[in-house]
Picture 1 (cartoon, rainbow, N blue to C red):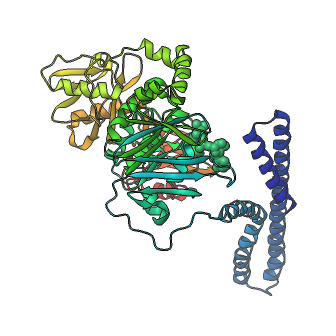
Picture 2: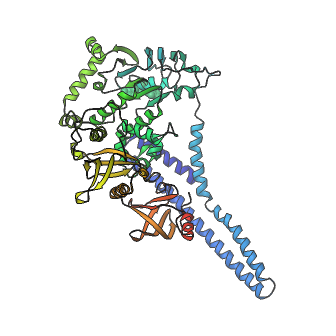
Picture 3: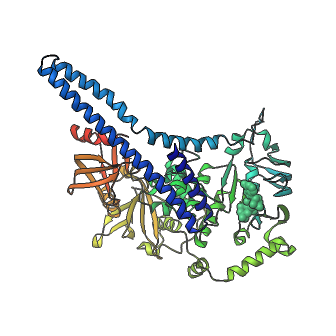
Length: 600
Ligand SMILES: Nc1ncnc2c1ncn2[C@@H]1O[C@H](COP(=O)(O)OP(=O)(O)OP(=O)(O)O)[C@@H](O)[C@H]1O
Ligand SMILES: [Mg+2]
């Protein structure tokens, strides 16, 4: 118990210090404290289980000795002795499990304490007793005389009134701390207001079932929240039953598709806690894609583009412009330059709505918005990495995917066809983002000079030196393949996608498989000689197309994934991929050997 409370307090201290980022020394002291307790727990645990083993072993020896003597002295039959030993083993097994009891109990208690803490948090937002049905929702929002403070005596918003018409987009600006995010919290009913009312389509949100209200809202929070799980699971979180094509389209529209295709397992890459493994901007683009896929009636973007460089921001703005059509949208933005084309801008200051109008009107009235704008213009005159990059770029430059789409489209008309992907820029802009699917009737893949793989449209070569990335390498190894090349600036661009390789000719399939393998070497496992589980790792000894190989993977579901219909993909410690294409195709003994350790 002392160990438990020591560990808990250690964890708490470490957490508190890490969050506040205080002096190093105190942090080190706290982590030392935690380490010492952990060592102590491990030490006790190991000693205890070793002692148990010895006692069990000695017990066995004594039974053999006494039993053996009795059998020789004919006081007992050999059968009785063997039966006794078998029962003894049954008795020892649960006793052995008891030796792990302390460790189990410790983690159980500390885990349940955290869960209970959460469960004990009082709920201040209550469901209405008789919720009003929200019939024919169109998404009109009305804040009237709203006053609210997290602390009742200190209002954060004071007497705020404004309307948003169905399908209208408004922008909210204001200094840090002026209450912008608070508005979003109130609209989602994460807090209840103290005075005034908030209505949607004329219904006070306090009269709607909370679930009913929130399912119509899509909020991209300032800090994007991602879960531990694959990128796809995070993307489709709001719509688990979504089709792959819709998911891909949402990711493409928000500029997330390209960075996802660069991840080791594309859409099936596992993200850590809070989306660990992605950059801030990438996380944000992923959470925007998730919200768009959710297809909410009311869209709230809280600084959705603040973590993104100027170039990416531009492409997201374009994507959003298409996707906010027909949706009531509240966009909170710090970069005023992105608001120039908004119909109505609401400026907040110290919790009050102080101005509203278009960019030009607000500049003319020379109030807080004009001041913020002046400050930002001055700041943006200083060259930053972002501005330099954008200044250096060709103004006609397109997001790579759009360029590539036009490239493919151009190939099907009589226009001159670019020969390599390098000329993929500077083609007219399209206003909708959608996947460019390559058609077996129109496109083909060939191996050209220097073994380079080429994409052809009819008799025209569209690009050479292409490579192909499966978007879902484990689940759909031969479908949703992203055909990629290098753009002018050295960035990867997508030329189009293959929906399913099945519909292509054998010749094309062969070339495409080669192209996939070039990008990430995948070895096929034909025979399984041995699988050994030790210390949370699996050691494999297998026969592949390139001979006998040994490799090690971590024994977790993130490193041994389902592959296709009934196969498995294994990722070893160096990120090499090994595939058992069909478990049923293995010899029976080898299948059993394999499934003995990989049983999920
Ligand atoms: N959960 C909370 N509990 C108590 N006070 C809060 C909470 N969230 C925000 N506040 C306070 O309310 C005020 C308004 O915060 P809010 O997050 O709405 O500002 P904001 O306009 O979104 O700022 P920023 O531009 O920095 O995001 C701030 O003074 C803040 O300290
Ligand atoms: Mg905020």
